[in-house]
Image (tube, rainbow, N blue to C red; front, side, top):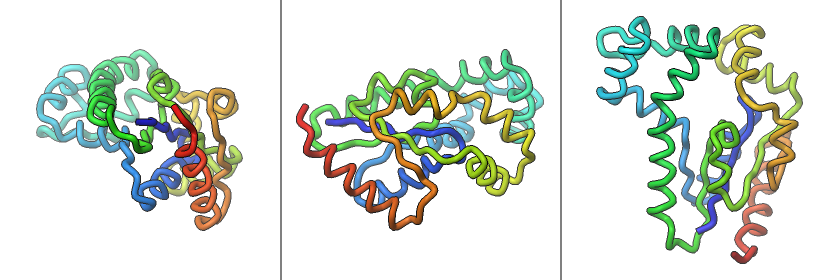
Length: 196
């Protein structure tokens, strides 16, 4: 098995690249989808309610409220991460164990790949990158948030300039979808031909 990490800061096109890889028939494990599933887990919601009682109403997580709480207080963000990341670490280890004898490329789609140290599990890392102003515009439009809210979220993540140094391949996602797809096909062919 070769594990390929796909990462990039919010709004940089990581999900677009991961979707292309899925369309090409490869297994893509999505850390964000694991977190979304977690918010429907009763045990997790019970723990969340203990730490952030105002963020769970009638057994349902109010993610907007939770975002407001944690993005304005670093210690509260750390408390939330203590609930989420042990679960994600376990999921990643399960993926590695499940695919250990596979001869195929396996992909991990994770925004916080470097921040959480998951890059140590990866044989290769692909970074989605884009100009800061395009990134900001994408996120504000997609999530219907202010420039101030974007900055709060973006400042939690490592800057892409730093991630570039740690990545094997950097793709500028300010391109048409067919161009990105062609780029990903070429990259995957190269990765499949690397031994070890």
